[in-house]
Amino acid sequence: RSCRSRKPPRQHYDKHGMARYDRAITVFSPDGHLFQVEYAMEAVRKGTTAVGVRSKDHIVFAVERKSTAKLQDPRTVRKIHKLDENIVLSFAGLTADARVLINKTLVECQSYRLTFEDSPSVEYVAEYVSGVQQRYTQSGGVRPFGISTLIMGFDRDGTPQLFQTEPSGNYTAWKAVAIGRSQKTVKEYLEKTYSEETAEDGVKLACRALLEVVEAGGKNIEVAVLRQGKELQLLGDDEVEAIVKGIEAEKEEEDKKKKKPSEK
Image (cartoon, rainbow, N blue to C red; front, top):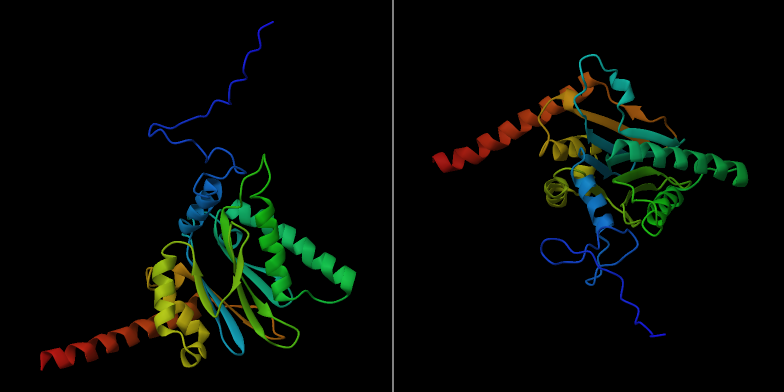
């Protein structure tokens, strides 16, 4: 019997002659990329924008609100979710993926309370969420979560915390951050304007940052404010509209001041 040499596994190539490393989630490309994870990050970049701002005594989420159909109940389209008494989550990306991840996290928060008879810390929740996201980048037969989350809350000692998690399973702490569509533009604005003084009015700073990429109007923005020991406060459309009008008036004043020296 003649011994036949075993042929190497057939590699699939695209039209450019490159191997299709994006077909399997657990396969690295030669240059160290996991393409499915990068595609999940792209899904986040196509999602509606969310901004988080941390201040000394409060934390703010300002999120872009999707326009709902005329006959649709807007209460069923939510971007801000309460996870525990003092921990709140917002997200950008695929809403269905977010719902699954939020439900998992709600169960974990209740399980923590049952086991330790205490509330979980904000970092514990951020680590749990990112841990679930990471597990879905390392197993066959699954795909990464197409969402990035912002998690805000207060620790037991009253310290405000703001975390971001990514589809890769990474989580980081921030003073102010943006995720979703045009996140780069909003982050650049926050980097220029964030300070201890501007953060004293976190609602105004978050709304102003979001208005860099969102059309003005209270109907397009949803705002939530969390203070230690108090219930999550969701601002009404009239309140948001008043804040937006105030910001627009300030911008007009700033533009007039800039024009005056040039006119001289």
